[in-house]
Image: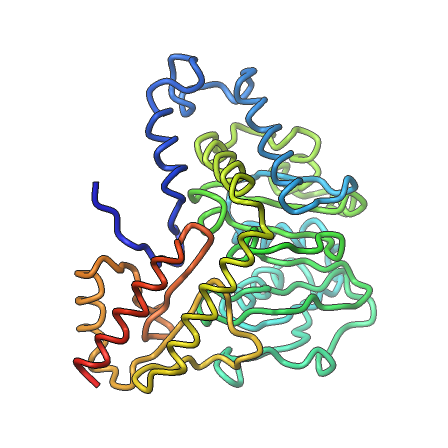
Length: 359
């Protein structure tokens, strides 16, 4: 078997141990004589899996008892609409901090359902920094404040949690489970699965119970968080395979020492990659140093005419999916939990050799 080092931003790398367990389980899951994809979501075996997945996620993130954990479909993009539909009445104002493409998209989606105030906007510097919190223009009676702790495309990350009285809503799709987080500081955390949780198709939503009754009365049933909380996320047939893989990933994380252990490795991976970028004159990173992402590291070659050669040769060396997002260009290495430190070491070695050859 030949495995590459996969730096994809999403769908992203999965732990090899998890993939091997899936391979074993596919024809006969837990002695049922069926694949997990063929089992009823109402059956005893799957109900136990769902309960275990929630319990393990609660343990990993130290989720307080007064929060519900939901596993809906639709990805983070659906949650961009569900946030205003569940927290703001028509005409209510919601504050949005826009530090990248996903924050901008979330604000645009919310504007369809409520009055959106852009409290901060980093587009003036091409989303390469985070405006000082003291400069934010916040509303007096905002229904909530929404922000994106990590912007996957531009590689900008908050290394602090915003304050204020309004419930805090965070799209943690590309940072969840990469380190500990104080869940109690948030009203709602949501995350698409396809980065640190599992395959695309399922979403994690962590919502404070006191917020569950704020949904609009005319919400579609599947757009109401309370419907998932009341049905153990089985309002309709859930994406059982994605849920099953998420359960395996949560168990893998616990075996590896939890998010505390992940944080140590992730910090080390990011620090050594940024150090190499800063040390080598051939490469640069445009993001302000106080808000560089641990998970998504963009970098630019001094001579962009060499981009195609870099991508071709890196792929030949077993380093894949390094092309930057089309809106930014350059390169991007996404180094989520399942990307081993050896992958970062190999990338740095390649970058050094490429500079020697082309610099």
